[in-house]
Image (tube, rainbow, N blue to C red; front, side, top):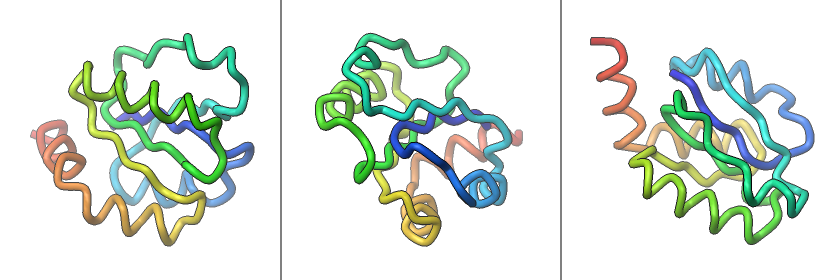
Length: 103
């Protein structure tokens, strides 16, 4: 699966945590600059993860709208692996998307 990560200046251990959920590729936007509001979600994106404690507020709203328009699962998490793992474990849409990719 491919993910768009929005927020956080550094990802730390997050890529390792993502690989355990089948997310092998990702695009990372820091989400701190207003110019990012106009960026387009890559067309091959299977899921969007927003680190809400490290992102410009209006970008969060815009990403949420773009995810709904494209029918892409969107997870909102703190930039902590423990919180991200908890959110991914509870994301029904993410699990369905992973199953569809594996079949």
